[in-house]
Image (tube, rainbow, N blue to C red; front, side, top):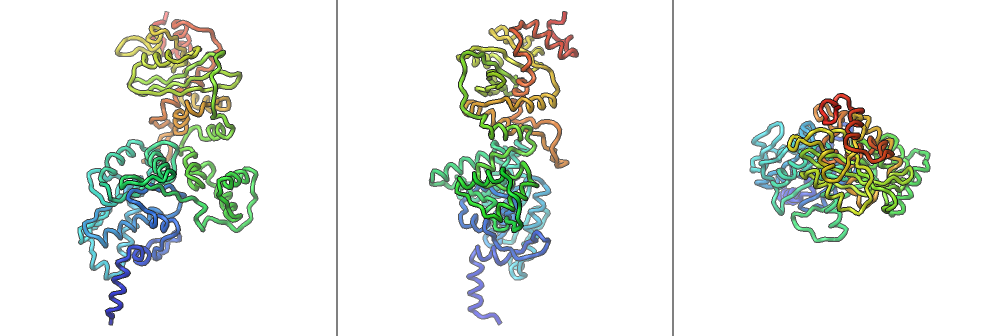
Length: 506
């Protein structure tokens, strides 16, 4: 027979959310076995330090999504009129998360389940008899939540920027001040919603800013804090690895021999993805290039060799420009000088929804001695509005444009890769352009789950295409200034199939 004291003890325990999380819910572990859930070090740290809005940058396999799924289930079971939403990267991921929630609910003690029945039980939603509900999906627009979890936001922003915008304008707007949001992910480049939120939250943390209920608290969970990430076997430490571990020590991050051995072995498998999947610092996580990026190795080498630095304009040398001209879209321009065999890129310019004349006036305003202005081959086509080619429009405004060679897209990308060892970038005036190159990547085929062969047309496309113009037009910088007619003939030489469309076909 249950005593009154036992009833009081049970009531006290069930009133404690931390106790419930560590004593009521079951999961399937990595070995495929059912076990009682107990918060690990990272989950406990998040629980102890969580705010209303939380942005979480992490290493792999720390169980953050599992923790938040169970936290939301617990809030729904023990509080009335709570609505919780869990948003995943893909439908498959959403279904997997819902299985975790459903398994934890089905595995509850019978007494609790009988008191808190699920009146609606579908493939993606549980509605309980206390009018609380938990929903899992890939979009949450049109719903109202007190709790919202967004998993792998960095991956969403990198592979589907439109979906990321939808999440910001739709799902995040379902929350009011004082409600709870958890956004977690590994890093995917230095651009996008997840990067922006992390940067703002990290800056506020460094400045010890008092957070409002709408500010995000930054949480970072590096790999070396996980007690499982060690290896007792002896592993040879290369000079490259030793240099890396020394760089961590310079930041007061000291690793045990077992941690170093684990890292070396893991990095031998992860390769270029290691710093993104298992970061040691937030800066390191975001310094790793986005998945599918075209210029990963080239940019890493550029940084390592110190070729992103402060550059000085040499007034004795001409400044050239390389363009990607947008048609109702963004236009991007790199400004550079040839310094011996080196190519010093002084500035990166980009704007959108402006005519060609806007950019020509912008160049005129700069105090440079101009050389060639390299443009892609389609600048010789007529515009529908004016009937003039871009070459003719530029000439009327005092500029002579030089057509770059008409290489295929893949040939042009390869030309840029070969050109990289000669490139130097001004760290300030090219900062936006460097981010663009970091994020220029292949398109993601969500249906088949792999990277496609064509570039993703996003905010990075225009600057990357302008750099391709530079690589494809470099050979023309040795020529003397040419007339529009000569430029047109050069265009026809590289593009004979277009000769009948051009104004100088005689």
